[in-house]
Image (tube, rainbow, N blue to C red; front, side):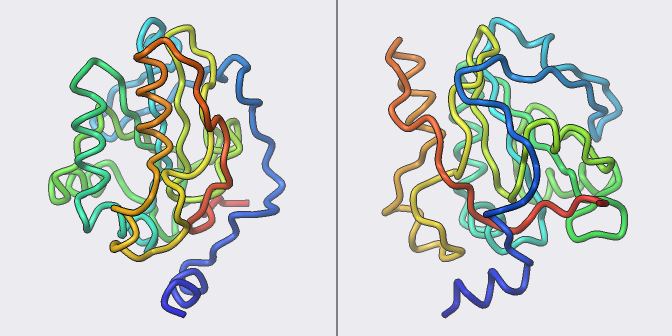
Length: 201
């Protein structure tokens, strides 16, 4: 019941949004975006490194599950410790839940002790729609050749309950571990869960 109420509160629409997504196994779409710190970055500049993309919205109970517990921050720190690039992306439009100015985004990163390499502000939704991002969180893992290796949920239990984190299989961790070992990613795609991305249209 708690999960259902949380989903209703944040307008969950994990299924059925008419947003095209790149195929797993294909070239990850290149994009250029402005970070909260004022730096313009492009995905293509990170060729040769693994990259994780995380769609986020601080007002979403499913995102709060992973940040309030410290799970997302721990994952960010672990992932980036080997040189993997972590890019958090905010695609909420102005006036929508989760929208953030650069100052707000930087404060949020500091206050949550988050550790992404970059926070990209995508209020036009251009990058989100390029990737077919449907929910927050919605996760993508890209390998050194910029091939999309994983797309979907952060883990295997679609709830907003922090107690479920320790019981869940973290798909991002699993995908990165496989890539580091030179093995094929076992779960390459899953159904994302969370709040709908608050696009302008």
